[in-house]
Image (cartoon, rainbow, N blue to C red):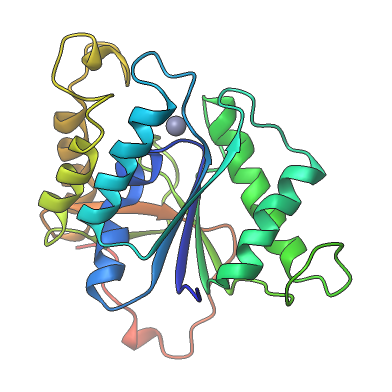
Length: 236
Ligand SMILES: [Zn+2]
């Protein structure tokens, strides 16, 4: 399956929480969109791998994505090894995305940190002709980093006002994690209602760019522009 966009993250629900609105928006725009989860989330306080698989399936349907795979790396044991890089490079060669979305490069959770590094390295390796894996070489045209967990330096925002309801619905699909019980409010950040947090964060970012809800992204490279007068609005 040839994809336009592939989001890579450590755990099921990471993509939905960080950039689910943008994923849905890309689907709305007619793009082929996929998600690669690196672990099955079996070390999570609540739920197990099977429950989280069903949750992810429901979330995928809500988002309307075209592809979802799981590399089954050990949860809480994601490591930056050549073997893991090649596993991801294989998926990149199979799905041939133009755009890859990774988790931000500074993270508290080691799995998130290493998943971001693995994703970056895999994008590079997948383009090498002489790499020791099957498939035609392919290097994504662009890597962007979803960064809504942190007060990171953001490069741009995506208006998700028309997708916000479905984003929340996709996160809500993770019934094993976020079922409204007092203990589920301790999973994400102690005492935090995740839906409230997601909503406030999206409103906060939306405020920067004059829309109701937005998601934030960072890029490492600079952007070359021919006509600055045609640039989209970046702030108001
Ligand atoms: Zn995670």
